[in-house]
Image (cartoon, rainbow, N blue to C red; front, side, top):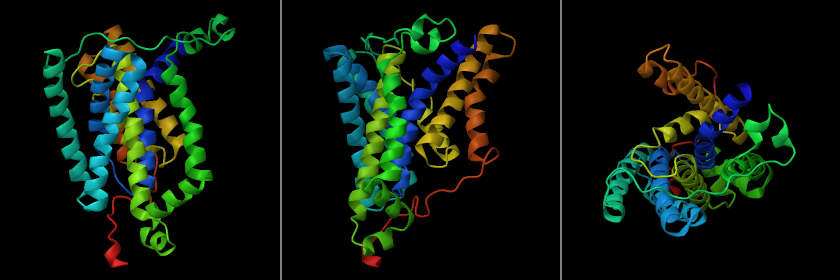
Length: 303
């Protein structure tokens, strides 16, 4: 029972984890990316398109490409033209919703869903899948789940141990000082936002290709916003974001099980993950410290 609940929490938490890792890259570079929700919507739709016509691997590639295009728009608007980052993100979310509906009508003759698409072949860990209490965790697992959790130590290493990560953190803390030292502030901020697009696209593709086997309008259910809360709760670190994503995944998984029991009204139970998001953002559970220049546009002429 517990292992099944944990396995469900991992599956539910994976899209939040991927998007939260993307948010860490973007915000450690100083750019708030509230457009993650729109990038996930874009990734989920184009992931289904690619998987439907050419298979799941093509779906992943197409989802990432489409989400990176959205991220590039956000980077150009906020980094180059210094538009308010929240406004840009909200506009991207609206654009993604409308574009996905338009393209769905054009390609599938349906506004809100795609045909069923083929996912990856599930994998199991030989030997461990024979242990009853471990079986739900290590058998018939999506390869994207493995990739997603491997990205956590990789992201930690990139951000904390590499020259790129050091420079990205520098422009997120004090872009003027970084520029004075010769760092390319704009290029680094572009890199952070584009990486967030890559990971948000993967998160969206996981939902349509692996989780449900089709694109359904509204399938992200605000997970892009929850990913931002996970990043904040995780104190802008990949490892912290992982634990926060698992917490949200556990809350969602619990909500499904309680709904099935029909003990508590359905509408109240479905509120649990979103109520938890509000609690996290209010700082009730934990006080966090964002990068000093997070959300502040940098204008080189002022240096």
